[in-house]
Image (cartoon, rainbow, N blue to C red):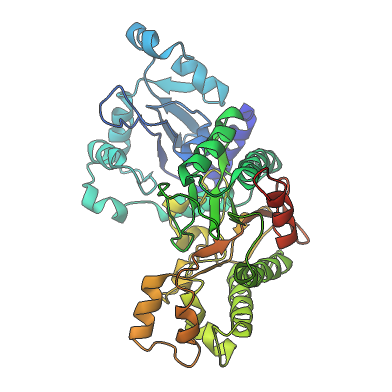
Length: 466
């Protein structure tokens, strides 16, 4: 964790922003896989981590804005617990580590909240994303799970987004640690991928890189020869000569900060000419989007620039036609690029997604309902301190191609005869992580091969090449 003053200052600023009332933070509990004593890897709630910094299960925090008082609730371990789990600091010691002087057993949380309700004080809380939190809010505040989203504090969401969106120097340093290990994960894949290997072999090897570095995964590994499925977590295919292999994987530091990189490589030592043509188009869009990154620019414009660049490149290859400005405005390009250019990143790989994209990525503005554009997670004006991804891609999704063709959709912009001949192509993307600076942007972490020449240089150096 950071030094205690970091958490003290964060909570102080939050009090100033919210103004009055009680702020309730529910930490996460252990989540059993199939019985109580066999839990999944524990992951603390990110907002609880941000303000209280404690990576232990079974905690809750309250910030009393009116009394300028921070409180930590939890239970000390019994001897039976210690036998199985080892020693831990006491609840009081945990609180002192993050500048919280007031601590109490967990069952007193209900008493504090009941008193606040009796006094008709405002109790602020965030949208729950785990069923356990729905039940806790039901028990603590008598709010039925079906109604809980009607009672979340938009004021609190907006205040937290305002803080967490702008990363401090110590946060950026921690994120960069995660990105560097993420890069090592991808470099491992570049050096090992070969025909006859399974996707699972690659996924296991890169997970080992994260674990050996004292980190965990920031999200489940995407390691696939079917890159046209955007979040493909199946690892049962065998790599064959002629395949493209897409890896989307990132590491998460012990403090919870994430990296998120994507790479696309040929299973052979070199790309085929067909693969090179599509790869160049996506890479051109990638570089165009990076060149336009700077404070004051709306990220939606970066996204549309990438869309237009992809459309231009695909028109040059005979996949698209007609007026490309109109094609992008109407969403015809989304046949090939049905997702967004990037997203915010920090304590969550999709930072604060549980708080709502409309607040995090859109500053309260409504999202588009157009296919493709509706999947853009970030559209707001960029500011120094923002950390985000750039990840345009090109995907040939057979079911989507067949559906649009059957509907005669965008016939003025799409040459379906040409597109259908690429239904077996798959998909590709590269992804990097960027910090918005006062004057532009900075790519975080060590370099990973990106150009065709760089990729083929590292792929061709493998033992299997030739």
